[in-house]
Amino acid sequence: MRKPDPKRAKRGTRGPSQRQLRAGELVRRALADIIGRGTIHDPELMDKAITISEVRMTYDMRQATCFVAPLGGSLTGEDSEKLAVALTRVKSFLRGQLAKELTFKFLPDLTFIADTSFDKAEAVDKLLNSPQVAQDLDYESDDDEEDDLPTEEDRA
Image (cartoon, rainbow, N blue to C red; front, side, top):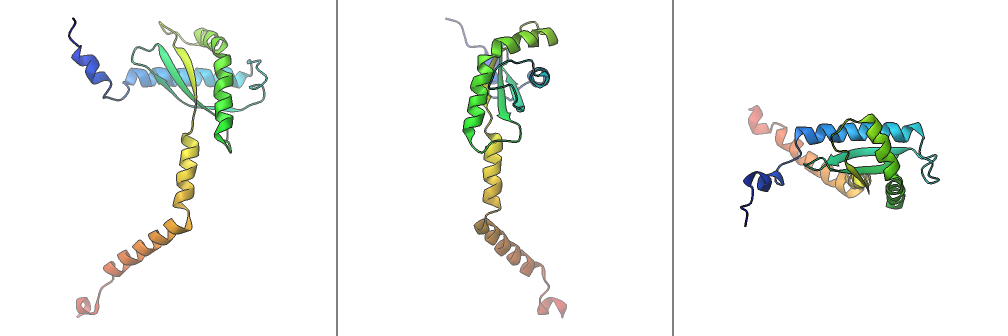
């Protein structure tokens, strides 16, 4: 039985390496160019503007997870899910186009996931702008202002 490699055990606890980040950004830019050209002949993707917000590469650069969303966001998460399914259908075409643009030793296998970070950010923004939170913030700022003002004893 082999001993576990201590370097591999630590790999999962750290963030992505500089190499992974750079390769992910190259794949993201290349995919955005390919999709932007309009060479995809899928009916669900023909006239859609797509945002590829992030591409995460595995440590061995064999898998790329692409986070996609419709440009400008969507009212429901269903649009992002449909977009991810449609891109998964044409991933072999996209991979072939990536091979023409990138010079990687191994071209990564693409996985498309609906990006919900924009929806979550919008929900947090709505929550922060809600009247209950604004009331709490006004109450806290009133307390802070009273503490900063000099009292009669301080003036004397």
